[in-house]
Length: 116
Image 1 (cartoon, rainbow, N blue to C red):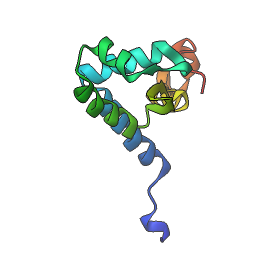
Image 2 (cartoon, rainbow, N blue to C red):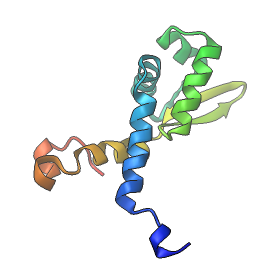
Image 3 (cartoon, rainbow, N blue to C red):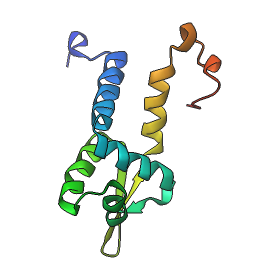
């Protein structure tokens, strides 16, 4: 790969942020993501997420795949259950990207919304 084919870091971050925001730009996925965030690192089983979003398991699966693909959530097995938890580093990075240039590059003015 030559220097002229490298993707600048800023553009890569913008593309990543855009993909993550796109994943959240759906009411069901936003509901699921908020439930996962409330649960924190312990996460929630898929059944609880389906109940929270009031969708069927098959419908939930497609939404979880989008959130997984965007890197906003992680999944682990616990016996027969799949537990979904937020990828807090990815969430911090997204929030940091959004407020990085707050008040002309002084994110501390934003009241400490994010600690990256």
